[in-house]
Length: 431
Image (cartoon, rainbow, N blue to C red; front, top):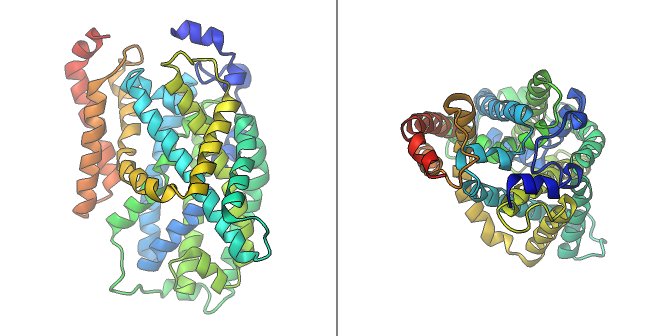
């Protein structure tokens, strides 16, 4: 289906503007954008990552690793967010400028698969927490996980406005819970003095490269889909201000709390550490709220990615956003219920090394090459650079060299710019 036909068949609101730029009438305030963007990284995984790193490093070393990695993540979120603000396009459709129409479906498929798997994992995890904390709970774990996943789909099915409503409720609650954890930690044992004096077990330490790579790897997927929300911004200042502050709150602040909790309790397991400090109930409530504000974003982003895939089929512009979001939710619930996630997760973890180079391709094309490939079917230069960047990142991680995702990003950006300048005429000639 041609682009014009697709637009004609797909009224923006019903399809969450998947096939076109978000119109000015639907753009929203910086505060609204902040709440939605903050709701996504306010996630349990950032508590967990902070705890795992804090247990294996001194307090100062852990803070340096977190600040370094988070600065890179914020750069990705704001940079791609600004491009989305300018173009009005979602992450998946934005990737067309580098990969081409059909080439972008490979990346979109990875987004859909990653989202479905992580939604399923989090649903299964929370259901297990409910079973442990409430022995009287009547539903089996599989049914509980399916129910909670379907609950997350309600806001995702309503689109950006649904995400906004949940974030206005969840962000203040989750932030308050994090503050409570931090304050209560200071009142326990030797307080914050124990944190400053903490020394990890020499046999179980983590290097700066490993720590920073773990932080980036745990949230680069989230930064990649920042454009899905940032395209609704009214101004550049809104993107920069909301993107920076929301990411800092959701990433560094939560990781910092996780780090402090682990060092006070001397336990890398965030759930166990908080339980040992008498914070089990607070964390359970915080976990529920964090999951609600995060997983609906995953479902929403996967829905937009699926629209990009369908755009190259006869179903282009014929399936509404709400039905795609629901189908992705059902798939995630099935994965969680049947235990297939234990087989899919290693695959997603392996593919995650390929995520850091993707924003480099988009930024390089938009800012330096400036010769969009959205009009062609497939751009082989983008695929070569994507794979090469992932390989370089993996080698840096194995060699314990600097921040491996940063190296992969810089390498990909330079390589794509150089190769595009050399081969663009030939690539575009094949359109």
